[in-house]
Length: 482
Ligand SMILES: Cc1ncc(COP(=O)(O)O)c(C=O)c1O
Image 1 (tube, rainbow, N blue to C red):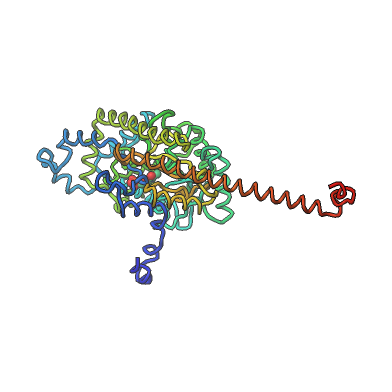
Image 2 (image 1 turned 90 degrees about the vertical axis):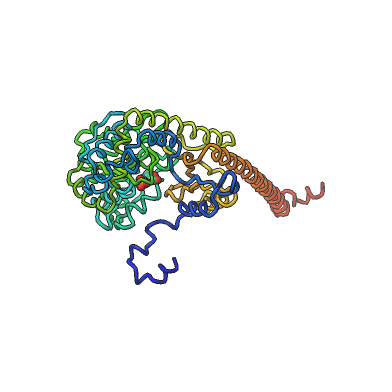
């Protein structure tokens, strides 16, 4: 840090800008966890990480598969014969088997209602790389993408930082469960135009991080009509597609595209990754699926900066081609996510804390508006500081997701074991009860003070009234009687 501030002239503007977004509450929470990480026996009073959308609930299934399929790992006795071929392969189209297996997996996750052509698959370093590559392909510096709020904080880094592209908020609010409405889209588009900002696209995330909700068919149709009408791109991040754990089912943009008359497919691009659905963020398997041949070709050239290693491609191709494993995995994963989600949300409901109704994702959107001292983002951050420093839970404040209303927090629930989960819930419940008690006492005190003030005011008014020359009390007749 010292080096950067002291040597700004030596380095580029992009490198030294804070476009990475590292200095936000979202990342501060991670730092707080790293400085004092919870451990059941070695650091039981440490910070519990609930700010990381990781899916660790099905590693037993993955491990079992890896042990039973040693040929898929080229560094085992059984797989070593493929080592050479894999190690020297460097075509940026990627292994054919990998693209086939990923497309098939994407179809399965979408209930086999759509088909994907492996030739339209472009690799990238996670969804992070996919977003940046698409931003580079679709927009010039200064151009903007509309994005509904609240949204995943990483989008600021991924789409904006190195590309110079802007993100322009489509403000969604709690009164209608943060629905993306036609009105909100039109209003954001108009505001951008009034500010002389050229809108090149709309970015949506379905299922949503941080809301854990999915978009319904009508909303998806409205979105498609909107982007067609404006002739702008639609980037649809479907990275949480297989995390839907209860009804209604997930609906992909690829499915709805077929139902909207005159929809220009060339405007639609899907971003996917195995970081969430399979829980492999470390493998950096990101995918751009574009319906536009020119974008596929441009993105493929750019993918040289973020390819997936062939060793990973080989393993993934083999794992995802095992349809029985995949089906079992998706089914079990959704049951376990549902149980976790229920455990936390029902537990919180017992102490009067509600969360946005959701059926997907690795998190839920907790409503702590009633625990704020006042309805401001300062008060939200004050509350967050207490939660992280005293309750020792790293949940993420809504402001870091560009939420338009203070008091919402994202709580991740799938990145910990059962015992840690119980400790986390106990801590939240305890805190909520304590805080509610404090707020009730403060409110009572306030009420008492207000009442006292009102009483003394009314006495004063009475005194004034009595002493007023117009008061009947001032009348010599009344005075005579008292
Ligand atoms: C909505 C969304 N998109 C993209 C990403 C980045 O994913 P990846 O690890 O594949 O880069 C995340 C990670 O949290 C995310 O939540």
